[in-house]
Image (cartoon, rainbow, N blue to C red; front, side):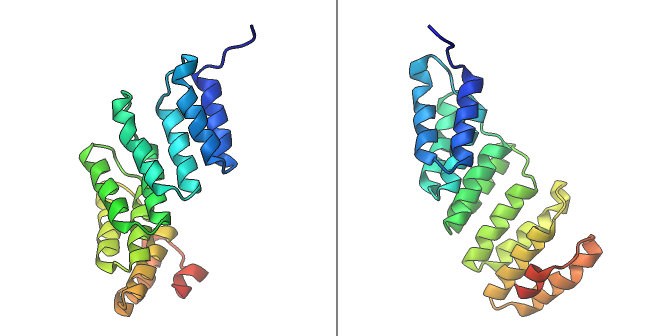
Length: 187
């Protein structure tokens, strides 16, 4: 009869597909789990959402996130980060910020990846004020901004024609214990 796959083996296979950029295969594995008598867990969904993010399929990533509660699962910071990043990569700023707000409302604590994806979404849309607001709220939320946080906010200000704020952020980086890099200066 052989060995029957369990949730761990399915999750490993979905993660392998995600890492290999094989979104359709990851989704097929997620869909076949119930028929094989295996209940997908948060890890199964997170790997599938990440596969969609890497494949540029933001709508499918968000759809999977929305499906989790119906499957009796509570999305966690990894679930939200992958969906927010998928929206950011697709230049879907409103959707990314909406998911960020939804995450907060659900009581899921954002991490530096959450903030960076949201700030980067603002950067792509040239929404300087929102990028700055997110950057400024990070310390109060117990999240330390990193170089990526600042670089995305600097770039958002540059795209918004707000060079004074961009320059101010660049000068602030050393006080935050960060070293401006080539990206900081080229933003």
